[in-house]
Amino acid sequence: MNRIKDFFYDKNDIIVAVAILIAAAVVIYIRVDKIMAYPETLLNSTTQQEQEQASQEMASEASDEEATGDAKPIQIANDPIPATVAKQLETAGIISSAADFEAALKKYKVADRIQPGSYQIPTGMTNEQVIQVITGETI
Image (cartoon, rainbow, N blue to C red; front, top):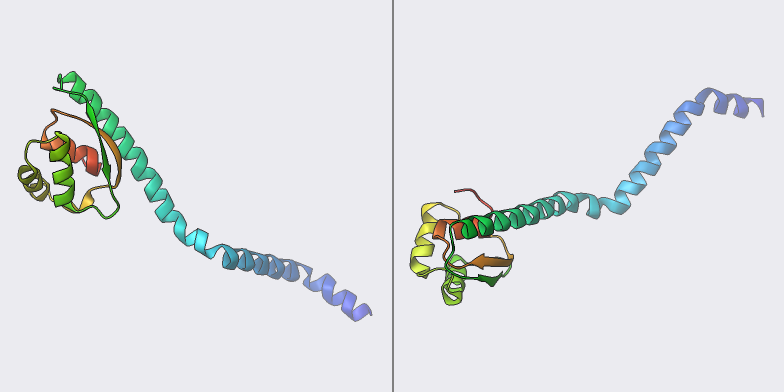
């Protein structure tokens, strides 16, 4: 009996450390899907905040420059196609030409950076200003 007691007394720190490691491994194993999804969640959160900030800045800039109309609601779907987005913007009266808008997307190399979401885009903005709103990129 003393031998068992001595073993636990001598090895107590090691046993506690191993128990902590096992508990940590179990928690990580159970929550690995949440842990792996965190960077994407953080990126989405940051992107949404940047989009809202860019939209607010563009709206205030547009009002400062005396935009020629009201803001129009635009909904950009997941996996946006530049041609579809350009046509949406043209139909809403935000831009004058879908072809010119697509050319501007290619010129600034941001066609693949269009962010899905809901936007209130003032009419009278330049193609570059609209691109900044829907991509969150500074041109």
